[in-house]
Image 1: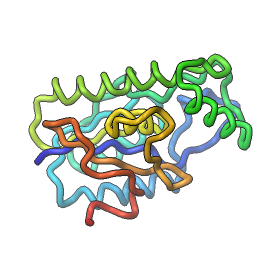
Image 2 (image 1 turned 30 degrees about the vertical axis):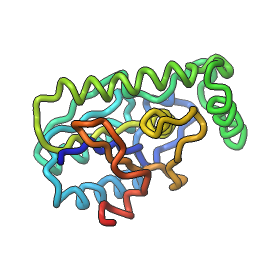
Image 3 (image 1 turned 90 degrees about the vertical axis):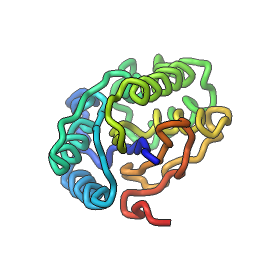
Length: 196
């Protein structure tokens, strides 16, 4: 049974002076992605995709290079658009995120609405599953909020009621069956691996 493995990028270099989409993975994030590649050794991965944000492409490059593959960047795999505010420091950021998930039909401070981001990410994943010509596992490196929105769709629950990644630095994954587009493994951190 071939799968799509959706992983949220791990830790990044937080630099308020640079646009958020340009933030790279930091040393911890890179090390965690390298660990993830080791866990993929027993799986047949035939394609790698990433959002067009630097942190996701950094993660996809680590996976693809280790497996002797290239990766494809897809704008529709990007995080919810937060350009209206730019960087917001915690804890205020987490307050805005709670509003984003709590009022999904509203634009919070000019951010992309959660319902719109959900439609975009679900359509992007379905398109990849439909158009990818390989037959083995696919790895998608993307972002936490859109991963939660995708999970809500797969779990058939309202936005904000889905299960969530628990690692504070990101670097968590879900597994989706390629054929049925159903969730076969709920969120777990890279370090937890694939074994039951």
